[in-house]
Image 1 (cartoon, rainbow, N blue to C red):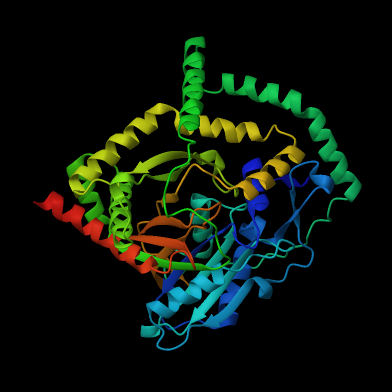
Image 2 (tube, rainbow, N blue to C red):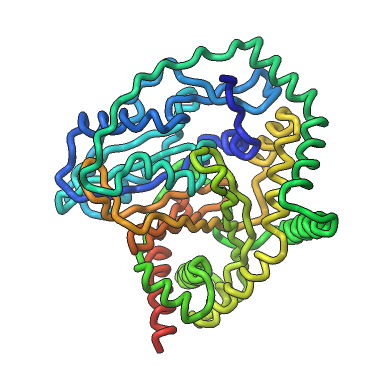
Length: 464
C-alpha cells in the first residue's frame, strides 16, 4: 500500500509548529476510582491500536519539501514512550489538576515519532483518576477525536475482551521513490485540478442553474472572507510565550437546550452568547472599554460526512463571528449572536473558506511551505480568539469498567491568538475548556467564572 499524503490543511498545522505554538489538541478525561494499574491500562491501549492506524505512524517529509509529507509506519514504535504515568501533588484538587494539564500540554510532541501521547494521572481527590490526551492537529479534528474516544472507551462497564492483533510495520518508502512521487505529483497538478473542478460540477449539482448558484455562493463567500480580513483591535492578541494556562467552565446541557428552545436558536448560538458575555466581564475586569472593542472569533465548522467516518485528518471549514461584547443584556446578546450566525450560514462564507482549503491541495508543496513559514513569522490579523463546539456522546462511557465522569477539551493557541475556547457535551453535561498564554493570561480563572455566570444569566433570563 502506497504511503498516504497529508492534506494541505494537515501539513499546514505541522508547518505552523514552533517552540512558542504547539499545534496539538487534547482532552482531560476524569474517571471514577479506584484507578487501574499501568499494566492494565497499557494492555487495553495495546488492544485498541489495531483500530488506530495513525497512532503507529510518523510523518516523513519530502526532500526539499517537493510535495506534502506522507504517513509511514514507525518501525521503532514503542507504546511505553507514548503512554506516560504521573500523579498530581496533594491535595489532588482541581487547581493541581489544571496546573498539571497546562504543563503537559505546553510541551511539543516529538516530530520524529507518532504524534500523540496519553498520560495516566493518579492522585485525584475522591479516589478518581484521569487521562490526558495529546494528539497533533495534523492527525485529527474535533469529530475525529470523538471517534478515537469510541475506540478507547466502551458503552458498557463490562465489554467483550479485545484480542491483540499482531502488527508488522510496512517497509518505509525509499528516498528515491518518495522523491519521484513528489515530482510526479507536481507534474499532475494541472490535470488533477481540472478533474477536481469537473468532479465538483457533477457531484450533487444537477442543473447548470444549480452549478451557477453554487459558484456564486463560493464567490460571495470568498469576498466575505476578504472583507473580514481587517485587523481587529483587542488585548487578546499579541506575542505568545512557550507555556500555557488552562481552565474550565461547566454547565448542564438541559439548561442550554432550554434557552435554545425559548429563543428559537441553536445550542451553538447559546454557547457563543455565553462566551461573549464571559469576555465582556473579563475585559471589564481588566479595565478595557468594551463599547469600542471588537472580538472576532474563528468558529470551525465540520464538513465531515459519513464517507469520512474512520478517517483521521481534518475535514473542516470556518466562519468569522463577531462576539457582541458591547451588549450588556443576556437576551439582547443572544439575539445579536443568533441573527449574525443565521446571516453567516447563508452568506457562503464557510463555503468560500472550504473552497480555499480544497484549492490549497493543488498548490505546489514548496510554495505552501514557504507561505506557511511567512505566515508564522508575520502572524495573522483576522481573529482575536477561536471558539469551537464539539458534540459528544450523550450516554455514559467506560474505560476498564470505570465510568468516565467528565470530559474537557483543549484547543491550542497560535498566531498571536492568546485565548482559545473549546466546548464539548457529554452525558448531559457541557464543559468549556479555556486555553491561555501563560504570561499574557494570568487571570484565566476570571474568564472561566465569567462564562459560567453568563450561562446562568441566560437560563435566568428565559425563566422570567
